[in-house]
Image (tube, rainbow, N blue to C red; front, side, top):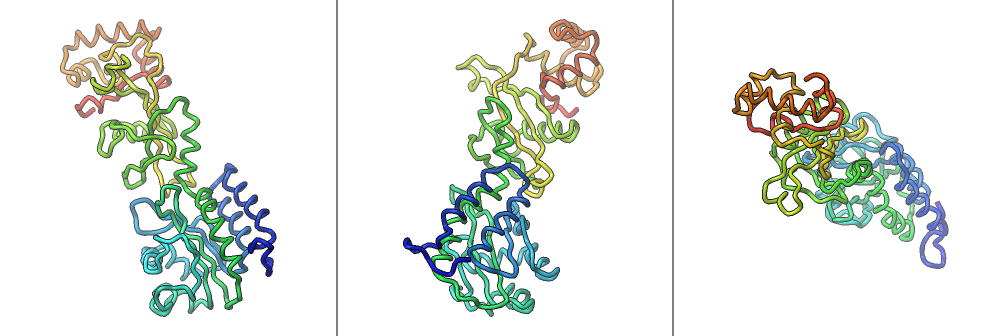
Amino acid sequence: MSSEPGANGRPPNTAEILREVTGIAAEPGALAERAEALLAQVERVVPFEASFIAVLRPGEGAHVAMGRHGYGDRVEGYMDGTSMLEDIELLGLTRSRRLMQNSDSPVPMAEIPGWAEYLEPAGFRDSFAVGLFTPDGRYLGVLGMHTASEPPVNEANLGLIELIAPQVAVAVDPLCSLATIAGLVQRAAAGIVLAPSGAVLSLPGLPQHRLLTPGSGVLAAAAAQLAGDGPYASFVAPLPDAEGAEGGETHVRVTVLAAPSDLRAFAAAVVLLSPAPDLHGLSRRELQVLGWLVTGASNERIALGLSITARTVEVHVGHLLAKLAASSRTAAAARALRLGLFVPSSLLGVPS
């Protein structure tokens, strides 16, 4: 760490550190790897014996450590529980973007349970922490550093930590990483993130859609398809009549991407809507029949599910076999799964 500020009042290596942090935020890779690289840059500004970057788990009152070192098991247990969030709220870090040192605390540190019961007994004498926020102002998590002494730190260095905090937030925001993954799906027009709790979260860069609202049949079908087909699933869903009337579209493609393993504490899956694929001339009813075929249902079961006769089902099956150039029901079902050319039976309001 440089002890003297430059002519502009900031440490002379400010530009270099900003460049490094911005580069880390832009690079692909696991969040934990980015967090460790970011903590190394922070240490160039403020020396510490222990540090961490933690991100709030959606819909829950606890953080997940993205990067952390220098703490014992007892302190880490406190950090992983709900008590740390309560202390962070007491300190005001969920509302302010200012870096806070012990001496800046709005309440005596002895009244902060985490400090008095865990951190100070572990040998720490001072701390520096700054809240991390998304561009739209949502509290994301916290960057914290602890020292075994009370080193003098000039305001310029503290200002630099505040300056890089937004880029740190971008680098460790799970939703930003998921938005990058979602970008692999061409022509995606709407999307959401499904949290492990079932909560629906906004996906940066894409609007939401009425088909993706909490409790919708499409989201239920998405979760079911993902559970059965692995990390990726695709199907079509009918658009509400009024919505599809203007452009003549009757269906939309639903793509479901399982969250990578390093993001599963925050998200179960990304669900995206894009224009329907080539339907190969399949009618709305034939797409529904295909939804039952992929489950292995018999004509009688399909007839019951669609409230039509088994003879009518047989006619529809014959038509869709011809349109898909499939030699059998099994071949048609396999092709429908591969192309995402079916409406899940669960969307028809009858349990499969």
